[in-house]
Image (cartoon, rainbow, N blue to C red; front, side, top):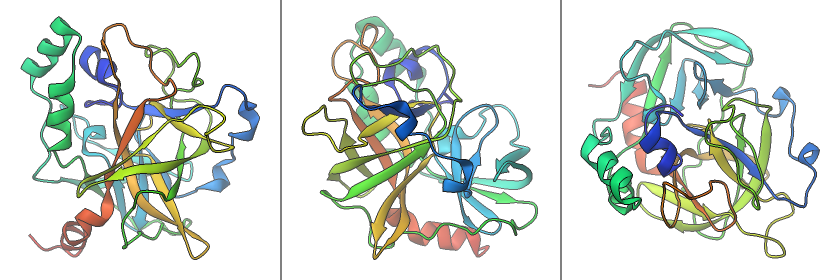
Length: 271
């Protein structure tokens, strides 16, 4: 992970992010896709993602940005791209140590969920040079809504809904895509639940470690538009003993339509 949490326990125990967890009864090969499926995917150093939304701009979750070092470069379409500057939303807050300590002592992380839901986990990365070999992804100005099917893409940790995945496993694997249905939407967030068969979608999936900042897309008039980026996950029960990536768990994503004005001001150079 990077710094926040895709999974509450992983956030509390280390500092990393999340990837695509699949149905237990569907061959993994059906989820794997070539890089050409989504060339606008940006790889953060080590793990985590972003999305190219303009020739010189990448959007990501704020918690993917290194906390104690400068972000020097990201990779887009398999090529390193130098970073000119990073703009983190002023409403983003790093997780207080006391909340981590409380969760570690009690195994209960609801206060972390409350804290995360009130933070603006979004950042823009300005590249030193425009990207000319990749078409940026268009934003969904209408915003994500309950009942819409989303497509999620990432290279993080993987597993399935029955066994989950190991938080300490590799957080950068093969590129996968999966689908889910939005269950709730608020101003900053929209969320979906990882359903088990038979109610699951044919290629139902959710996030795992290493996919923070990865794209969440909604199809509008035949075009997949960027509606959000992966942020955090709700795990019920004791976070110290819970399995991650199981059926029933909820993933929440930054709702980018809420930040349209902010993104436009940053990219146009307004203070």
